[in-house]
Length: 439
Image (tube, rainbow, N blue to C red; front, side, top):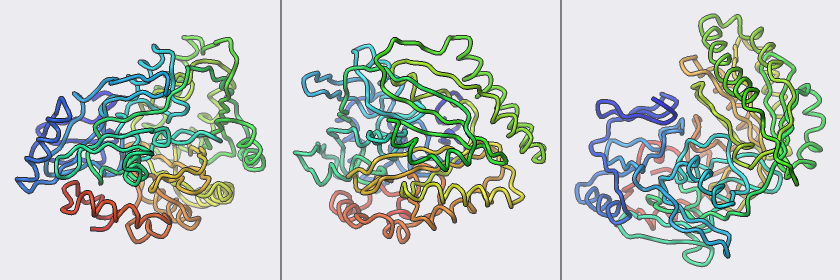
C-alpha cells in the first residue's frame, strides 16, 4: 500500500486504516478548469464534493459518499519568483517532491512537519506543523491561494486580494472550496545542525522554557512507562554539511526506528504486559548524535510503522503541567502505551482556525500502534488536554464538536460566516465538518 491511502473495489481508505468510504463518483482533474467543471456537475446532481490528499489525516475530514476529487494530476511547480521569494505549486504536489524540487533550485521552506508524504493542500488545510520558536506551521508560510468555490468559480486570495478569505482558507479544512494552487514563501537553502540526545523527563520539564528559548526548533519524545525522553534541537548553521553517515542513518532511522520498533509493537500488541519493558529498551536504543544537513533532511524522517494519533495544542505556558498530568494518568492506569509522546511548539499566528491562532502553543501528540485499542488512552488524554483549553489537530483523532471549538477559537464565528458566504448550500459538506463547524 506504500505511504499513502488506497482505493480498492471502489472503497477509499486513509493511511491509518481507520477511515474508509465508498464515493459515488471519482474525478482526477488535470487542470483547474476540469476541476471547476467537475464541481459544477456535482452541484447539478446535488452531490457533495471532497478533495483528498494522501489520506494522512486520521479524522474523516476528507471522507465523502459523493464526488471524491483525487489530486495526483494537479502536481508540480507552476512558478518560482526569486525576487519575491515565493514558489507557486499545484495543490496535489507531494511535499517530498516540493522539497526535492526546491533544493534543486537552491531554495527551502523555513519550517516543515516531520513527514513528507502529504500533498501541499492536504497538509496546509489541516494545519500540519513542525516545531519552531519563531517559525510557524506550513500554512503560516502561505502567501497566496487559488481555490475553486462551490459555484465552480476560481477565487484567488492573498494579504492584498480577498484578505478575509486568505485569513481563513490557509487552514480551510476543505470547507471553503477545493484548493488548486498554493504560493509559499521560500528562502535560499540553508543548513541546520541537529543535536539529538537522551534527557530525563523531569529535567526536560524543569528546563523546558530555557530549551524552547535557546533553540530555533526544539522538540522531544517521552516514552510512557519510563522517566526517559529523547530531545532534538535544530538550529541554523554556517556548516560544513555533515550528514548522518548512510549506514548509521539506515541503522537508526530504518532498522531501529522502523524495523525493530515495528517488531516491538507487534510483541506489545500480542502481549501488552511486555510494553513497559520494551519502552525502557526503546527509550535507550537511540544514542546521542549530531549532524548538519539541508532543512528537509533534518526536519523529516520516514515513518513506516502504522499508527493512529491524537494531538492537541495547549497554551505554551500550560505544557509542563499538562504533560505531568498525562504521565501521572498513564502511571496509575492499566494502560500499556508502546509509542512515544511527541512534544513540539509553535509561535502564535493570525490564521482563523490555526491551532496556534492568537496564542503561543505547545503540541502534545499521543499515538497508538495500528490495531491496538486506543480508545481508553485517547479518551483519558483528551480529558486532560481539554481541561487546559486544548485545541485538537484537525487531521487527528478527537471527539470535539462545534460547541466546544467555538469556545477555544475566539474567531470561530468569522470562519463559519465566511463558509456561509462561500458555500451556502454546503457543497463541501461531510459528517466531520457538520460535527466541527455545525451545519
